[in-house]
Length: 125
Image (cartoon, rainbow, N blue to C red; front, top):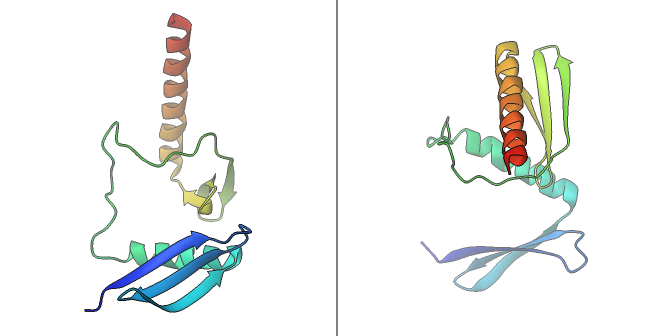
């Protein structure tokens, strides 16, 4: 198989993402993606990733490092399918999660417990 490479960078005006496909060091294709086209590509890649034979792990170890968004915007709503939690990621947009009511209560209580521990540790200092 030929040596292939994909280079991705932001355009100088920060309005598009530029992609260049190379085979054996030679550019064979270039494209510039608008924010809407990039959103579509990200959504398609995510849908394909979800179908791969090696899934994303169903759980995460305590203390594991994950990409973090500080104080993201979020909304809750009731959908026909159940409770919705939507969280805004600056790179991936609004991500929606339908959560079973019992999981919602567990999530809410877990956040309250963590907030209380954080507040207690600040008070103890």
